[in-house]
Length: 349
Ligand SMILES: NC(=O)c1ccc[n+]([C@@H]2O[C@H](COP(=O)([O-])OP(=O)(O)OC[C@H]3O[C@@H](n4cnc5c(N)ncnc54)[C@H](OP(=O)(O)O)[C@@H]3O)[C@@H](O)[C@H]2O)c1
Image (cartoon, rainbow, N blue to C red; front, side, top):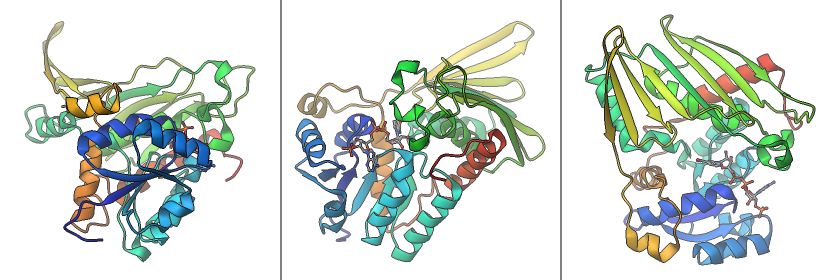
């Protein structure tokens, strides 16, 4: 790749997340050259809808010389094969979360990245929000004190009628842990910076007669360094709110929509019943010309992650300094451990 030129991007997958990610991609001003999916018609329809110049097959996409970075946005069980194929063709890869279904798959992806000397990162977009940078600053500067406990929940609330949704299908690695729970685990990893020494929990694989065979809801707790704790929960059929709380000795931070945070509520406890709350908010900047040209989708903040990936690739990095390979490995190993405790194995494993 010419190091002075902007990289060319290709998208693998044409589903729900691509419809949302594209707005951030436009805001970041990246050069998307083609989109691929299994069926030519679907790829073509999505290309037209999203203003992407070409629709191709997965094989054609990775064979093209003008594509430098592949963004992989298909259901979890297909991340590894598409990522390996792309990397073996010398492409850099941004792969949606969870990067793989288990840590063994991720290991193979990392080995392929090393062998082919390409960039590989899990798309943990939360880590790149300005609100998260502020959060870290508040805690590392010491004004809030070290975090001692994290409490965070995140769940979808699918009705039984949504039986074809990938989150209710074991063959598509459905369930709350891999789809939503990874955000909770990544938040803890980001704050504590290490794997827990112990993690344990309860997973309800079926909550009613529909017997979908995935973790419909789960709660889990973890201990880090003997003294820092986490209380987490995830699901796909329970209306748990996506709010995180970070507790220090006499301060707490509440993060609504913690996986794409734009507001930090800092609570200071002065005495029993005496709590002050201050809000720091961040607007996701929006280029109105882009929004007008490409539709009215809400601006969610994918541009921060996308810009980071381009910067890493242009610098010749293989790993992101923010979401390194070890980070993803730690999170997937915790998922493996929890699923093992719950007896949840996917049919293809
Ligand atoms: N960062 C976020 O906030 C966020 C949000 C949602 C999802 N995600 C992640 O993004 C990924 C995709 O989720 P989604 O909601 O977009 O899924 P989706 O709507 O079900 O779409 C997935 C796309 O993948 C393609 N596909 C399906 N099966 C495939 C297979 N066997 N091989 C290759 N391609 C296949 C499908 O296109 P064709 O049928 O045309 O092939 C479909 O367009 C998941 O891993 C999810 O965790 C991330």
